[in-house]
Structure formats: structure tokens, C-alpha cells
Length: 471
Image 1 (cartoon, one colour):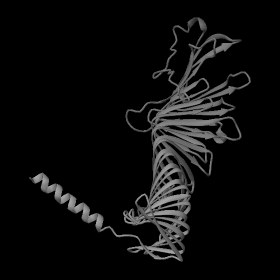
Image 2: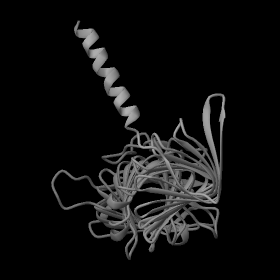
Image 3: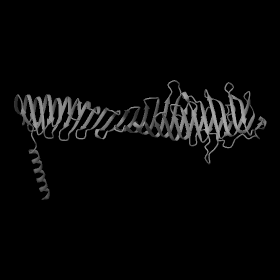
Image 4: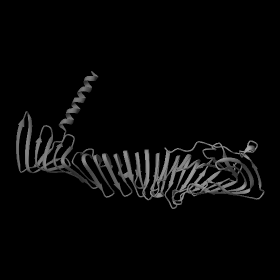
């Protein structure tokens, strides 16, 4: 009984809704003819045709009205108006039951907030929603969007675009396969093949959210950042970019690449986390598992700072540097690479408890790879010329182990101590040309036959083979 009652109520409600449906009314036509085809009542109107349904008014050159279906096919100079909305097309259909209009062969929608054009489209009057397709463009004084397909919500001014989408605002140009644009929130969400071009950077990613009012961007997936003003490129898994602050933060397998257009040398910096400060001076901070590579200069540390304009690198937290055959360790290491050429390396011991002296190891040539020259002191300065050591200064409680060779034959070892040790190299012969020791000097020479009795390793000697690799 209850089921029958519910069914009757449903049928009454449905029938009431059908009969209450507002019909599309023909207001004017220069000529009118009618017929019945297969039981369907059809009217053909021509010349200055006008229809009306509620607050919707339709004009066209000619039309075919299907009375029973409450549908009108519109042809020639079609115009539709609803309050502040205007819709123009050359050919379309108006469906009165759901107040929906289609347009083809070019369609234009205008309201006080935007103008929307496309090859074809559908507009839902009740929902204030447009779905346009083919060479779509929407223009507003504050933005422009072009795409293959676009859905526009008039009440919120939100746009959802697909296919070769380009969004242009005062703060940036965003391109992607898909973009959701929230005008009143100043928000652009893009995904798939995303590129954003702003004042000083170009960002590539899988997804991106951009806030035009704050000029902030948040990207994820295969992130790449190109600096417009220089030849520096950043990579990472996720990004935060603050254009007004000239600050970018990358995380997840971050990488910096700086290409020197004048030379074949390229600088690589890898880390778990990287920050870019595009101020004056411009610098980058790499944190956690930092690797640095530049030709035959290699470094590892827990935190590194790269000063781009002066081409200087500061390494902290257990830094280690390899240059040619040298290995250098200390509390902090500072390297200068003007013109992408290594010029000097400075190693400093910090004046805090539990820190270690600076240490340098230099491996012998291919005939004596098991022999290591060593220097240990508070601070070490290495001066480079043409990628070879030119001179070394060990300052503060210095000591050294240096192997001697004559005519490519081993000839003993020198053990030296002093307050400061200065070593000068003959680059032509590729060997030490002079050693000078200052204050509290101690030294001992052991001939080759007695090297087994000499001390061949200074305290802290620890050669490593974990050089960074380019990836």
C-alpha cells in the first residue's frame, strides 16, 4: 500500500513538473509556416525572428521550432540575452526544457567580467556555465586564457581549461595541458607539462599552483628552474618560489647546474635541499648530502654555499675536497673559482671544542700510488694555477710528510714540523721546488732504505675514494 502511494505521488510530481515547464514563446517573425511531421508539430519562422522564455530573449534570421520538444533550431546572426549576459553565434540550438543553448561555426559569450570566444560551445543558463571548444580564448582586463577546451562559471569567474592552455596575468605566463583558474582567489592550478614564466625565472614541473597577487608558486614533480638573468639551472622534486622576495626553495634530489658559455666547464651542485637567493649578491645554499663537481674539482659536505657573482664556494659540516691528486679536509673549506677556474682553496679549523686540524693528502703518481704526501695544521691555503697546485701554506702547528723522488725513482721521505710550512711547486717538473718552515723547526730525512723506520702517516691520515659522480 505504501509503495503504491509513493508511486502515485511520484507520478503526480513528475507530471506537474512537465506541464509546468515554461514554453519557449515566439514573439515575432516576418513570415511563419507550420506543419506536422511524424506527429511532431514544427514551425518555421523567418525574418527578424524573436523568441522569449522567462528572462531569456533570442534573436536570429530564421528558426525551426519544435513545439512538443520545446526546442528551437536557430540560424543566422543568432543573439541570446539574459540580464547582463550576451551570447552570439551563427548557428545554434536552444533547449527550453533545461535552458541550454549550443553554438557552432563560431560562438562568443560576453558578460561584465569577461569575453569568451570559441569555435563551438554550450551555455547553461540556469547554472550560469559555459563549455566552449576549439581555439578558445577568454579575456578579462586582469587575465587572458587560451585553450582547446574551457569551462567557465560566471557566478564565481572560475575557468577550467584543457589542451595547450596558456594563462597570462600581470605576474606570470603559465602554460600546461590542464589549468584550473580561480580568478577571485588569484589562484592558478596547472598540471601536465607545466611551464611558468615570471619576472626572473622560468619554472617547469608536472604540477604547479601560482598565486598572482603574491607572486608565489608551488611546484611538484620533475621541477626545473631557469634563471632568466644568468645561465644557472636548478632541478628538484618540489619547489616553492617567492618572486617578490627573489627566493626559491627546492627539495628532493636537488641539483644546480651552471654552464660556462665561454669554456666547456660546467659546475654541478647536488643536495637534498637547496635555496636560491636571487638578490645582490646572488647565492645558493645546498643542505644535506651535498656534492660539488667542476671539471677535476670535487667536494662533499653537509652544507654548501655558492656565491654566483664572485664564483666562490663555502663548504661546512665535515667538508672534503678532491682536486687533481689532492684530498683536503677540515672544519670549513672555502674555494674560489673565478671564470669557473679553480684559483684557491682555504681550509680553516674552527675555534670550538672537538674540532680537527686541517689536513691535506696528495697521492703519488702512477708509479707510487701507495705513497701520500701529507700536511697537517690549523689552517691550510692552496693556490692553484692551470688546475695544478702552485703553492701551499700550512699555518699553525704545522707538520708534513713528503716523499722524495729522483729521475722517477723513490729517494726517501722528509718529516717536518714547525709553526708554519710553505711549499712551492715547479709546474714544469711537476714537483716541489722549495719548502720553507718557520719557528720551532724540526725535520728528519729518511733515505729510501730506511723509510720502513720512518713515520709515514700523520695523525688523522685517512684517504677516501668516495668522490662525487655526475648524475
